Length: 105
Length: 166
Image (tube, rainbow over all chains, first blue to last red; front, side, top):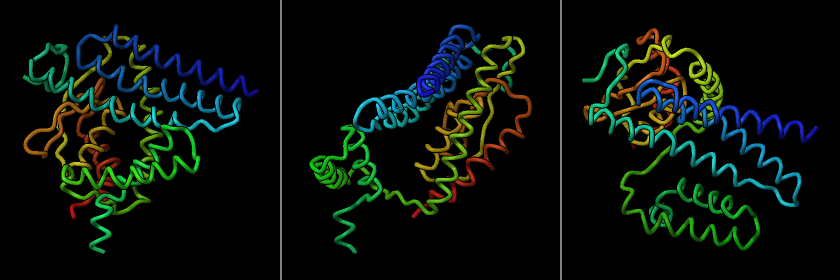
């Protein structure tokens, strides 16, 4: 049962991480590509880390909680780096898809 | 009180540092608890010159409720974005829009911007006009005014309650 939950979490995490990376490849312009790594991967990495915390807490003698830190750092760094890249992209006027509403000139 | 303020210029930072130290070492052994506490008191004290304004949390329960809502929204947003990514590119209607900010504290604004990036298919791109407007890019947006209203009601109102000028 325990293994089933762990494998479900790991598969879910792997799926969302894959979708995030796939978005990076597939979406048409820079700003849209930013969405893949900032969102789809947070849940992916989150699920993987929960699986890791559960595994090491139950399989070893001590409780493993430092996965929380990874989540925390990820939640702080992912949006900040996305923000900086978007800001830089606007500044150097990277091409936006034609159908973008309210294009920034 | 004044002396206490001098020793603990940033009580929240002290607690956070202490927590992070224990998590990094992945232990609650007595030695690390003491060493962590010493560092958590020393570091804010030595660096207080770099942090001129004091962080104050007004309504801790509102903050907890807000964090709960955000975690749930991250879950939902992840599903939504995964669906958008796996769908057809042609159906996506990306767009930029501005949010006029009511919240004025720097920490509140950074919380709001990070929340926007982590949740509903939007990434915050730029803070302009002296912290008055936030530029946001959405992967797929149909009704801009409704989205702005939702972000303001769902995220900005509780954050404004929590982080106030002092």
